[in-house]
Image (cartoon, helix red, strand yellow):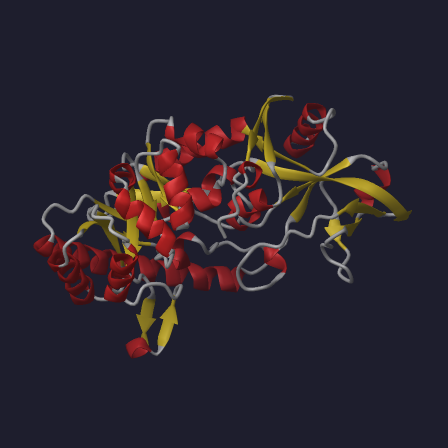
Length: 400
């Protein structure tokens, strides 16, 4: 029996009492992945990206392990909720226009001390001030650096379009703007190199593309390491008490951690290991988060139909954004239908061994987005479900 076949047998036994659709997290794999992230971070703390987890119980499980410290959140409303739930160090990774949230933040000393907001434009400071509604608490601010690689005099750009702050001078100028403005304090810098941390460099069947990605990423790492260090020096000249410099992601942990200027690493997807993180030469992990759909039809030889399953991930539309049929091995989508909202035909020899009511296990393309589809995650240890915990959705929250 292969390792994957053994996992399927375990998951089927563990969830035999549960009807599909159902989502699980294999805690042995989750913990092993957490250990690997810590090893790659080389002693620098890992801030858990909540967008990739979206389950308070599993955020707490990660943070209880040595090597993890703090949460990186994705909306202001989520940040305030987490802070009220006892999370003491929450870094909001994206600028917000949530005026009600800012009014709440600036009126509560506990929230203001626990939550750090992201800024890359002085106008965002004005929005916060206008939303204060009498709140006088000092707002902790993190400045975001654009990490994109610019070539040919800026005519070619590689990387996500995030912050407009690219040079050390631009970031330092904003730091001075914040420092001059009452009610704000610069405490950190963040730089997320998504074109390194979030792009696989070993795509199956694409050797030339994979080599091009590796060459791009090597150049991007060199350029960013030098520029990030210059940015930190420039900002520290304005804000000597800077508390943290956050960088990286699951795909770049060890590379980003090697930079002296970086004090902490962000990672989250590596805990669940969704399918988009299969194509890396720098690390490997164990799929920890899966979902099962039930077989409801057998239309013919070599084909079964499962209920639902059309759970595409965000990003540029493509087949890589679809969940992948994982267990039993050897199933594939019908190219004429793909993954459907209410039913999904699956082709391949294993279909003939599946009965109506059997489970087919899938892996989502991206990590936390799976939790937008399920109210609960069943936590599996060995061949048993040992706990069931709510996702954000299960606690009544859909932050985006």
